[in-house]
Amino acid sequence: MQEKVLVSVIMPAYNAERYIVHAIESVLSQDVSLELLIIDDCSKDRTAEVAENYADGKKVKLFRNQQNQGVAESRNTGIRQALGKYVAFLDADDWWQAGKLSAQCRKIEETGQVLCCTGRELMNADGTSQGKVIGVPQEITYSMLLRTNSIPCSSVLMRTEAAREFYMCHDELHEDYILWLRVLQKYGPACGINAPMLKSRMSEGGKSRNKLKSARMQFGVYRYMGFGILRSCYYFIQYALHGIRKYH
Image 1 (cartoon, rainbow, N blue to C red):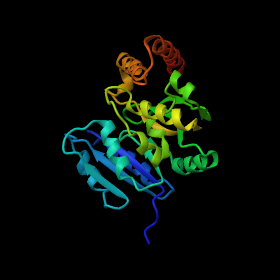
Image 2 (cartoon, one colour):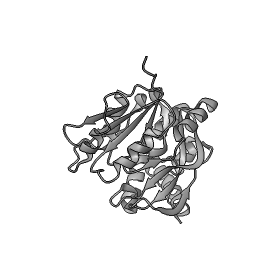
Image 3 (cartoon, rainbow, N blue to C red):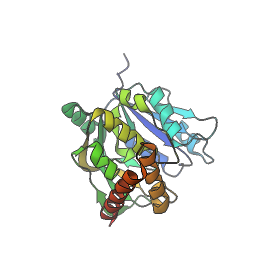
Image 4 (spheres, rainbow, N blue to C red):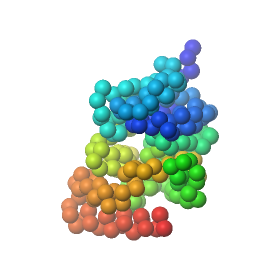
């Protein structure tokens, strides 16, 4: 009998030919029963061809969007196709430390919470370390998350049914942040493992590199969540102060 899938790893990919092998290998080195769902979003380079070398239709599955859908809908494709009890997200330019998924599975079973994240180490585009580690609290409440998005998307493991309840939306905002807020608002705190099990590549052109654009998106999230101007401004100020402390 085929081993039951515990974790479905969802990897959206767009023009990631240079990095995706590292990401895939870091998934396949994990010590839990998993499937890897790669969603190629109409890449213009050899991303799909490289991913095809790993795809066997069982442990590694490749999906190719017929038109460019954006990262939110690409992840949603993975969520819809997932067979695992949990889904985990990994961008094609990031990678994981060995043992990440098993540590998170133990943590989430111990706490009974629906979402678990880890700390991260910031990496240069060439894969070398920037010497900066950003940790996470052992518990992250909805109120804490409103003040700063302390949950790195590529570090997340969450229960599949919770992801399917909300899915991701609004690529023009922080689509992952909206999902975390909605999940914590309903299900209570997330748990964190304060170790840099995620290696986060700071690629040129990423959302996090354009601070002004990221700030506008953050304010847009507060408005999307139904907050008025004053409340949105209050949380935006908290976000800005946390950002200064986090990166400097």
